[in-house]
Length: 211
Image (cartoon, rainbow, N blue to C red; front, side, top):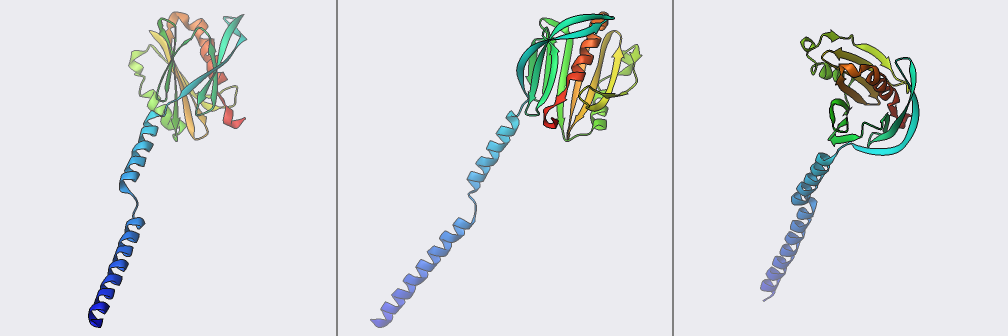
């Protein structure tokens, strides 16, 4: 009787120890289904990331066009999440955001187009290489030189213009570890007014994080 009782007790103790170890082992491993779910949620958030444009106040500005001062209404915009400000004339009121690209046009006028892009963790030279690939020099009667440019907000970058039959080109500036590009296109006959407008746009680009 004593032997059977001892054997029973040993079996009971062994079972308790085994179950305890098995439970501890399960606790030591992460829940794979939960990890996969969290990873899926992170990817979904990443895919949904996009630039957001906040519209601020409109103000009056004096611009020189063909040697004459001209009063224009400009709207202040903010690009989030990068905290970048820029100004643009109020008649460029059609704004479309697709991921990291902002396309701005005059209402119902497709020939006047401005694109802004923000690229993270890239260099000025790499951005310029990618931009220049978009312009086939054989398509234009005039190809300007790639020039250094520092805007009124002390952002350092480059610019280049191409002309005929359309006037097009780009500005590109370094902003921290990112780069912002401005591409534009408009009819050649609109150059007298659009040239100063594009210059004002490029000079208005401001990095709020540096203020």
